[in-house]
Image (cartoon, rainbow, N blue to C red; front, side, top):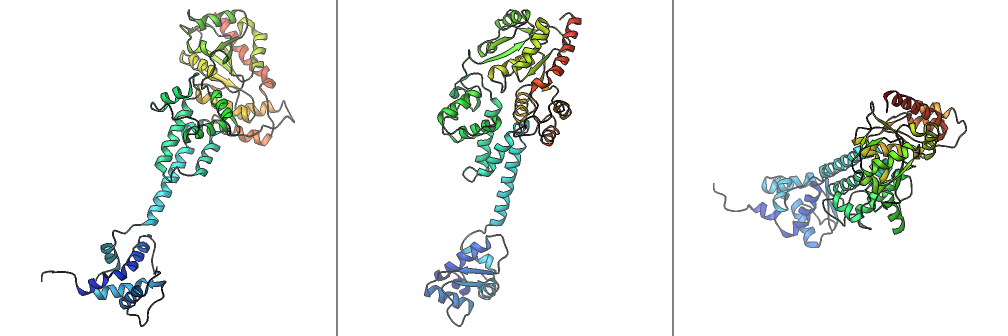
Length: 423
Protein backbone atom coordinates (compact mmCIF):
# COMPACT_ATOMS: atom_id res chain seq x y z
CA UNK A 1 0.00 0.00 0.00
CA UNK A 2 1.40 3.39 -0.99
CA UNK A 3 1.09 6.34 1.48
CA UNK A 4 -0.76 9.18 -0.22
CA UNK A 5 -1.28 11.65 2.60
CA UNK A 6 -2.10 12.09 6.26
CA UNK A 7 -4.78 9.95 7.86
CA UNK A 8 -8.00 11.41 9.14
CA UNK A 9 -6.73 11.03 12.71
CA UNK A 10 -3.54 12.94 11.93
CA UNK A 11 -5.67 15.67 10.37
CA UNK A 12 -7.58 15.97 13.62
CA UNK A 13 -4.34 16.40 15.56
CA UNK A 14 -3.24 19.20 13.25
CA UNK A 15 -6.36 21.32 13.87
CA UNK A 16 -5.28 24.91 14.61
CA UNK A 17 -7.49 24.95 17.70
CA UNK A 18 -5.27 22.24 19.26
CA UNK A 19 -2.08 24.25 18.76
CA UNK A 20 -2.08 25.65 22.35
CA UNK A 21 -2.29 22.08 23.66
CA UNK A 22 0.71 20.85 21.67
CA UNK A 23 2.77 23.89 22.66
CA UNK A 24 2.01 23.29 26.32
CA UNK A 25 2.78 19.57 26.02
CA UNK A 26 6.04 20.31 24.18
CA UNK A 27 7.07 22.72 26.93
CA UNK A 28 6.33 20.21 29.71
CA UNK A 29 8.04 17.29 27.98
CA UNK A 30 11.09 19.49 27.44
CA UNK A 31 11.43 19.98 31.20
CA UNK A 32 13.41 16.75 31.51
CA UNK A 33 11.23 15.68 34.43
CA UNK A 34 8.44 13.12 34.72
CA UNK A 35 5.12 14.51 33.46
CA UNK A 36 1.70 13.37 34.66
CA UNK A 37 -0.45 16.36 33.74
CA UNK A 38 -0.11 19.29 31.37
CA UNK A 39 -1.65 22.63 32.20
CA UNK A 40 -3.03 24.44 29.18
CA UNK A 41 -4.82 27.74 28.75
CA UNK A 42 -6.36 30.16 28.67
CA UNK A 43 -8.41 28.59 25.87
CA UNK A 44 -11.17 30.22 23.89
CA UNK A 45 -14.42 28.39 23.24
CA UNK A 46 -13.28 26.85 19.93
CA UNK A 47 -10.08 25.57 21.55
CA UNK A 48 -12.02 24.16 24.49
CA UNK A 49 -14.33 22.38 22.04
CA UNK A 50 -11.38 20.92 20.10
CA UNK A 51 -9.82 19.64 23.34
CA UNK A 52 -13.16 18.10 24.41
CA UNK A 53 -13.49 16.35 21.02
CA UNK A 54 -9.93 15.01 21.22
CA UNK A 55 -10.35 13.61 24.71
CA UNK A 56 -13.98 12.52 24.28
CA UNK A 57 -15.25 14.73 27.08
CA UNK A 58 -19.00 15.07 27.70
CA UNK A 59 -18.70 18.81 28.33
CA UNK A 60 -16.28 21.59 27.58
CA UNK A 61 -13.21 21.78 29.84
CA UNK A 62 -12.39 24.93 31.77
CA UNK A 63 -10.53 27.72 30.01
CA UNK A 64 -7.50 26.67 32.08
CA UNK A 65 -7.29 22.91 32.40
CA UNK A 66 -4.91 20.21 33.55
CA UNK A 67 -4.86 17.47 30.94
CA UNK A 68 -3.79 13.99 32.15
CA UNK A 69 -0.94 12.83 29.91
CA UNK A 70 -2.12 9.22 30.10
CA UNK A 71 -5.55 10.20 28.75
CA UNK A 72 -3.89 12.22 25.98
CA UNK A 73 -1.69 9.25 25.06
CA UNK A 74 -4.79 7.08 24.71
CA UNK A 75 -6.53 9.60 22.47
CA UNK A 76 -3.50 10.07 20.22
CA UNK A 77 -2.86 6.34 19.93
CA UNK A 78 -6.51 5.78 19.01
CA UNK A 79 -6.38 8.45 16.30
CA UNK A 80 -3.07 7.62 14.62
CA UNK A 81 -1.28 4.86 16.51
CA UNK A 82 1.56 7.15 17.57
CA UNK A 83 2.82 8.54 20.86
CA UNK A 84 2.30 12.05 22.15
CA UNK A 85 6.07 12.61 22.05
CA UNK A 86 6.19 11.72 18.35
CA UNK A 87 3.29 14.04 17.61
CA UNK A 88 4.68 17.10 19.39
CA UNK A 89 8.11 16.61 17.85
CA UNK A 90 6.52 16.61 14.41
CA UNK A 91 4.12 19.48 15.07
CA UNK A 92 6.30 21.76 17.23
CA UNK A 93 9.92 20.64 16.98
CA UNK A 94 12.62 18.66 18.81
CA UNK A 95 12.19 18.30 22.56
CA UNK A 96 14.66 19.84 24.92
CA UNK A 97 15.84 18.71 28.36
CA UNK A 98 15.88 21.72 30.65
CA UNK A 99 16.75 19.67 33.71
CA UNK A 100 19.83 18.27 31.99
CA UNK A 101 20.73 21.75 30.75
CA UNK A 102 20.45 23.13 34.28
CA UNK A 103 22.68 20.32 35.54
CA UNK A 104 25.19 21.03 32.80
CA UNK A 105 25.19 24.75 33.59
CA UNK A 106 25.49 23.99 37.29
CA UNK A 107 28.48 21.76 36.60
CA UNK A 108 30.04 24.51 34.47
CA UNK A 109 29.54 27.07 37.25
CA UNK A 110 30.95 24.73 39.89
CA UNK A 111 33.97 23.95 37.73
CA UNK A 112 34.54 27.67 37.08
CA UNK A 113 34.55 28.65 40.76
CA UNK A 114 36.63 25.61 41.69
CA UNK A 115 39.15 26.64 39.02
CA UNK A 116 39.32 30.18 40.41
CA UNK A 117 39.64 29.11 44.06
CA UNK A 118 42.38 26.64 43.17
CA UNK A 119 44.28 28.88 40.77
CA UNK A 120 48.00 29.11 41.51
CA UNK A 121 47.84 32.89 41.95
CA UNK A 122 44.99 32.63 44.48
CA UNK A 123 46.72 29.80 46.37
CA UNK A 124 49.99 31.73 46.48
CA UNK A 125 48.28 34.77 48.03
CA UNK A 126 45.53 33.42 50.30
CA UNK A 127 44.22 36.96 50.85
CA UNK A 128 42.76 36.56 47.36
CA UNK A 129 40.46 33.80 48.64
CA UNK A 130 38.02 36.47 49.85
CA UNK A 131 38.15 38.11 46.42
CA UNK A 132 37.48 34.78 44.71
CA UNK A 133 34.50 34.22 47.02
CA UNK A 134 33.15 37.68 46.20
CA UNK A 135 33.44 36.92 42.48
CA UNK A 136 31.33 33.82 43.02
CA UNK A 137 28.77 35.80 44.99
CA UNK A 138 28.56 38.37 42.20
CA UNK A 139 27.67 35.60 39.76
CA UNK A 140 28.33 35.09 36.09
CA UNK A 141 29.00 37.85 33.60
CA UNK A 142 25.94 37.92 31.36
CA UNK A 143 24.98 34.51 32.72
CA UNK A 144 27.90 32.97 30.80
CA UNK A 145 30.60 30.80 32.43
CA UNK A 146 32.74 31.25 29.32
CA UNK A 147 32.62 35.06 29.42
CA UNK A 148 33.23 35.00 33.17
CA UNK A 149 36.28 32.76 32.79
CA UNK A 150 37.69 35.05 30.10
CA UNK A 151 37.33 38.07 32.39
CA UNK A 152 38.84 36.27 35.39
CA UNK A 153 41.71 34.95 33.26
CA UNK A 154 42.51 38.51 32.23
CA UNK A 155 42.33 39.71 35.85
CA UNK A 156 44.66 36.93 36.99
CA UNK A 157 47.10 37.79 34.21
CA UNK A 158 47.17 41.38 35.47
CA UNK A 159 47.68 40.29 39.08
CA UNK A 160 50.52 38.01 38.03
CA UNK A 161 52.23 40.86 36.16
CA UNK A 162 52.04 43.26 39.12
CA UNK A 163 53.81 45.10 40.55
CA UNK A 164 54.52 47.00 37.37
CA UNK A 165 57.77 48.80 36.74
CA UNK A 166 56.52 52.37 36.73
CA UNK A 167 54.54 52.03 33.50
CA UNK A 168 51.54 54.19 32.69
CA UNK A 169 48.34 52.17 32.98
CA UNK A 170 47.60 52.09 29.21
CA UNK A 171 51.13 50.88 28.44
CA UNK A 172 50.91 48.21 31.11
CA UNK A 173 47.51 47.07 29.84
CA UNK A 174 48.74 46.87 26.27
CA UNK A 175 51.74 44.78 27.33
CA UNK A 176 49.81 42.34 29.49
CA UNK A 177 46.46 42.16 27.69
CA UNK A 178 47.28 41.48 24.06
CA UNK A 179 47.74 45.07 23.00
CA UNK A 180 44.48 46.43 24.46
CA UNK A 181 45.62 49.70 26.01
CA UNK A 182 42.09 50.55 27.19
CA UNK A 183 41.35 47.23 28.91
CA UNK A 184 42.06 48.69 32.37
CA UNK A 185 40.51 52.11 31.83
CA UNK A 186 38.66 53.49 34.82
CA UNK A 187 35.14 52.09 34.98
CA UNK A 188 35.74 48.92 32.97
CA UNK A 189 34.61 45.64 34.48
CA UNK A 190 38.18 44.30 34.36
CA UNK A 191 39.64 47.36 36.08
CA UNK A 192 37.10 47.11 38.91
CA UNK A 193 37.79 43.38 39.29
CA UNK A 194 41.55 43.87 39.55
CA UNK A 195 41.25 46.78 41.98
CA UNK A 196 38.98 44.69 44.23
CA UNK A 197 41.64 41.98 44.18
CA UNK A 198 44.39 44.46 45.08
CA UNK A 199 42.25 45.81 47.91
CA UNK A 200 41.81 42.25 49.22
CA UNK A 201 45.56 41.63 49.08
CA UNK A 202 46.30 44.83 50.99
CA UNK A 203 43.44 44.30 53.44
CA UNK A 204 41.68 47.58 52.63
CA UNK A 205 38.24 48.54 51.36
CA UNK A 206 37.72 48.60 47.61
CA UNK A 207 38.42 52.13 46.32
CA UNK A 208 35.30 54.23 45.80
CA UNK A 209 36.76 57.35 44.21
CA UNK A 210 39.00 58.08 41.25
CA UNK A 211 41.65 59.39 43.64
CA UNK A 212 41.65 56.19 45.69
CA UNK A 213 41.74 54.06 42.54
CA UNK A 214 44.79 55.95 41.26
CA UNK A 215 46.48 55.53 44.64
CA UNK A 216 45.90 51.78 44.60
CA UNK A 217 47.25 51.49 41.06
CA UNK A 218 50.31 53.47 42.14
CA UNK A 219 50.78 51.10 45.07
CA UNK A 220 50.92 48.30 42.49
CA UNK A 221 53.69 50.02 40.55
CA UNK A 222 51.59 51.71 37.90
CA UNK A 223 53.21 55.03 36.89
CA UNK A 224 55.44 55.03 39.97
CA UNK A 225 57.84 57.95 40.13
CA UNK A 226 61.22 56.47 39.21
CA UNK A 227 63.03 58.68 41.70
CA UNK A 228 60.74 58.72 44.73
CA UNK A 229 60.08 54.98 44.62
CA UNK A 230 63.00 53.47 46.54
CA UNK A 231 64.19 50.32 48.27
CA UNK A 232 66.69 49.97 51.11
CA UNK A 233 69.62 47.57 50.79
CA UNK A 234 72.68 46.87 52.90
CA UNK A 235 75.74 44.67 52.61
CA UNK A 236 75.32 44.04 48.90
CA UNK A 237 78.59 43.20 47.23
CA UNK A 238 78.12 43.67 43.52
CA UNK A 239 80.89 43.37 41.00
CA UNK A 240 80.88 45.30 37.74
CA UNK A 241 81.02 48.86 36.50
CA UNK A 242 77.27 49.51 36.17
CA UNK A 243 75.76 52.36 38.21
CA UNK A 244 73.93 49.99 40.57
CA UNK A 245 77.11 48.07 41.41
CA UNK A 246 79.09 51.25 42.01
CA UNK A 247 76.44 52.80 44.28
CA UNK A 248 76.03 49.74 46.51
CA UNK A 249 79.79 49.14 46.76
CA UNK A 250 80.30 52.64 48.13
CA UNK A 251 77.50 52.24 50.67
CA UNK A 252 78.57 48.73 51.68
CA UNK A 253 82.16 49.83 52.17
CA UNK A 254 80.97 52.65 54.41
CA UNK A 255 78.73 50.36 56.44
CA UNK A 256 75.66 52.28 55.35
CA UNK A 257 72.34 51.44 53.71
CA UNK A 258 71.78 52.26 50.07
CA UNK A 259 68.46 53.84 49.13
CA UNK A 260 68.11 52.62 45.57
CA UNK A 261 65.64 54.26 43.22
CA UNK A 262 63.37 52.49 40.78
CA UNK A 263 65.36 54.14 37.99
CA UNK A 264 68.58 52.56 39.29
CA UNK A 265 67.19 49.05 39.54
CA UNK A 266 65.42 49.34 36.18
CA UNK A 267 68.70 50.21 34.47
CA UNK A 268 71.35 48.62 36.70
CA UNK A 269 74.04 48.26 34.06
CA UNK A 270 76.72 45.60 34.42
CA UNK A 271 76.74 43.85 37.79
CA UNK A 272 77.20 40.46 39.39
CA UNK A 273 76.91 39.20 42.94
CA UNK A 274 80.32 38.87 44.51
CA UNK A 275 81.56 35.30 44.59
CA UNK A 276 80.42 33.57 47.74
CA UNK A 277 79.43 30.03 48.69
CA UNK A 278 75.67 29.89 48.03
CA UNK A 279 75.10 33.69 48.06
CA UNK A 280 72.17 34.45 50.35
CA UNK A 281 70.23 37.71 50.54
CA UNK A 282 68.17 38.17 53.69
CA UNK A 283 65.00 40.21 53.23
CA UNK A 284 63.21 41.95 56.10
CA UNK A 285 59.94 43.82 56.36
CA UNK A 286 61.04 46.55 58.74
CA UNK A 287 63.85 49.12 58.33
CA UNK A 288 64.67 48.94 62.02
CA UNK A 289 65.97 45.38 61.61
CA UNK A 290 68.25 46.48 58.78
CA UNK A 291 69.45 49.40 60.93
CA UNK A 292 70.27 47.02 63.81
CA UNK A 293 72.22 44.80 61.42
CA UNK A 294 74.25 47.75 60.13
CA UNK A 295 74.94 48.92 63.69
CA UNK A 296 76.27 45.48 64.60
CA UNK A 297 78.12 44.45 61.46
CA UNK A 298 78.96 47.73 59.70
CA UNK A 299 80.88 47.05 56.47
CA UNK A 300 80.71 43.30 57.24
CA UNK A 301 76.91 43.27 57.08
CA UNK A 302 75.65 40.29 55.08
CA UNK A 303 73.54 41.13 52.00
CA UNK A 304 70.12 42.47 53.05
CA UNK A 305 67.11 44.11 51.42
CA UNK A 306 64.24 45.78 53.27
CA UNK A 307 60.74 45.98 51.80
CA UNK A 308 59.61 48.66 54.31
CA UNK A 309 56.21 47.02 54.65
CA UNK A 310 54.43 46.24 51.42
CA UNK A 311 57.13 46.02 48.75
CA UNK A 312 56.95 48.56 45.96
CA UNK A 313 58.06 47.98 42.38
CA UNK A 314 61.66 48.94 43.20
CA UNK A 315 61.88 46.29 45.93
CA UNK A 316 60.42 43.52 43.78
CA UNK A 317 62.61 44.51 40.85
CA UNK A 318 65.78 44.46 42.98
CA UNK A 319 64.94 41.08 44.52
CA UNK A 320 64.33 39.59 41.08
CA UNK A 321 67.63 40.99 39.81
CA UNK A 322 69.52 39.43 42.71
CA UNK A 323 67.73 36.10 42.35
CA UNK A 324 68.38 36.02 38.61
CA UNK A 325 72.08 36.44 39.37
CA UNK A 326 72.11 33.42 41.67
CA UNK A 327 71.13 34.96 44.99
CA UNK A 328 69.05 32.87 47.39
CA UNK A 329 66.36 35.06 48.93
CA UNK A 330 65.17 34.45 52.50
CA UNK A 331 62.32 36.52 53.90
CA UNK A 332 61.23 37.45 57.42
CA UNK A 333 58.45 39.80 58.51
CA UNK A 334 56.00 40.56 61.28
CA UNK A 335 53.89 37.77 62.74
CA UNK A 336 50.52 39.43 62.27
CA UNK A 337 47.78 39.23 59.66
CA UNK A 338 49.25 41.85 57.37
CA UNK A 339 52.77 40.54 57.85
CA UNK A 340 51.68 37.09 56.67
CA UNK A 341 50.02 38.63 53.61
CA UNK A 342 53.14 40.66 52.82
CA UNK A 343 55.28 37.54 53.15
CA UNK A 344 52.96 35.59 50.82
CA UNK A 345 53.12 38.44 48.31
CA UNK A 346 56.92 38.60 48.36
CA UNK A 347 57.25 34.83 48.01
CA UNK A 348 54.75 34.81 45.16
CA UNK A 349 56.40 37.64 43.26
CA UNK A 350 59.98 36.49 43.81
CA UNK A 351 61.82 33.26 44.57
CA UNK A 352 62.12 34.12 48.28
CA UNK A 353 61.77 31.39 50.88
CA UNK A 354 60.68 31.84 54.51
CA UNK A 355 63.28 32.75 57.11
CA UNK A 356 62.19 31.89 60.67
CA UNK A 357 58.53 32.16 59.59
CA UNK A 358 57.08 28.77 60.56
CA UNK A 359 54.44 28.01 63.19
CA UNK A 360 57.20 26.75 65.50
CA UNK A 361 59.12 30.00 65.02
CA UNK A 362 55.99 31.97 65.82
CA UNK A 363 55.30 30.06 69.04
CA UNK A 364 58.89 30.61 70.15
CA UNK A 365 58.60 34.31 69.38
CA UNK A 366 55.16 34.67 70.97
CA UNK A 367 56.50 33.36 74.27
CA UNK A 368 58.53 36.57 74.41
CA UNK A 369 55.48 38.80 74.08
CA UNK A 370 52.68 37.53 76.32
CA UNK A 371 49.61 39.75 76.24
CA UNK A 372 50.65 41.54 73.09
CA UNK A 373 48.22 43.00 70.54
CA UNK A 374 46.00 40.72 68.50
CA UNK A 375 47.18 39.54 65.07
CA UNK A 376 44.29 41.12 63.15
CA UNK A 377 42.66 39.53 60.13
CA UNK A 378 44.44 36.27 59.39
CA UNK A 379 44.83 34.48 56.08
CA UNK A 380 46.61 31.23 55.36
CA UNK A 381 50.40 31.10 55.00
CA UNK A 382 51.11 29.03 51.87
CA UNK A 383 54.53 27.92 53.16
CA UNK A 384 53.17 26.56 56.48
CA UNK A 385 49.50 25.49 56.81
CA UNK A 386 49.84 25.47 60.62
CA UNK A 387 50.98 29.08 61.03
CA UNK A 388 47.65 30.90 60.74
CA UNK A 389 45.90 28.49 63.11
CA UNK A 390 48.75 28.81 65.63
CA UNK A 391 48.44 32.60 65.50
CA UNK A 392 44.65 32.41 65.85
CA UNK A 393 44.93 30.06 68.83
CA UNK A 394 47.58 32.14 70.57
CA UNK A 395 45.95 35.45 69.63
CA UNK A 396 49.14 37.53 69.77
CA UNK A 397 51.04 39.45 67.12
CA UNK A 398 54.85 39.49 67.22
CA UNK A 399 56.57 42.32 65.41
CA UNK A 400 59.90 41.67 63.74
CA UNK A 401 61.86 43.85 66.16
CA UNK A 402 61.05 41.48 69.05
CA UNK A 403 63.01 38.69 67.40
CA UNK A 404 65.76 40.90 65.99
CA UNK A 405 68.38 39.23 68.21
CA UNK A 406 67.56 35.85 66.67
CA UNK A 407 67.73 37.28 63.16
CA UNK A 408 71.06 38.99 63.93
CA UNK A 409 72.44 35.69 65.26
CA UNK A 410 71.60 34.09 61.91
CA UNK A 411 73.26 36.97 60.10
CA UNK A 412 76.36 36.66 62.30
CA UNK A 413 76.81 33.12 61.07
CA UNK A 414 76.77 34.32 57.46
CA UNK A 415 79.16 37.19 58.29
CA UNK A 416 81.60 34.73 59.85
CA UNK A 417 81.28 32.42 56.86
CA UNK A 418 81.98 35.27 54.46
CA UNK A 419 84.99 36.36 56.53
CA UNK A 420 86.37 32.84 56.44
CA UNK A 421 85.89 32.64 52.67
CA UNK A 422 87.46 36.04 52.12
CA UNK A 423 84.13 37.58 50.89
